[in-house]
Length: 206
Image (cartoon, rainbow, N blue to C red; front, side):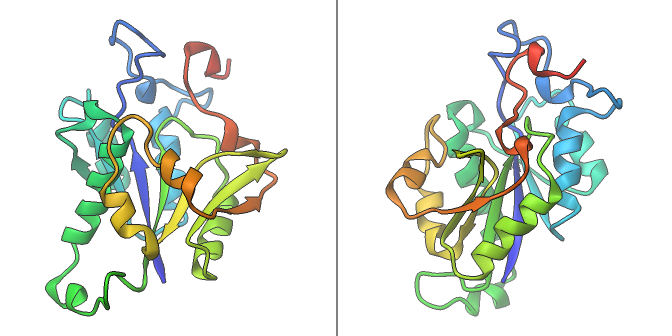
């Protein structure tokens, strides 16, 4: 099974800047790298294919991600919430498959595929965490999420079993309802980055 990395980078970050002038994904970390670039590099270090979702007016986020090697897709309904962006990403992944690949699918499941869904504002996740989640799905877990200090974090990996559920997502909750209603393999990781996001200016390291 080959997993595709999905980077959700379509949020407006209104809590970071209610005025909408400063895109949190384009803020710089102490080493000078952009938040979204750091998030993308981690995915690219693990997955051969990384699909990034951006909004129609992304302020340059898409250009940054294309230069890094991500496959960028624009979600026209991005303002409708993370669920719509994730469903758009899965749909893009499926449509990008060749007719021959689609013909090889069996029943309702697209065998041999899965997705690891990461957030563009979480640049501190370790590559080893992604590999651990990927391994869990390859070993049969339908959903795998990281656990640090007893708290579940992000990113989250999904197997093909949840393809239709992911395609049906909408609203601001993303995949939370799916995670609440389905068995989730909790993978313990020594990685505090799974709990760290850039939600406000104070979250940026000095």
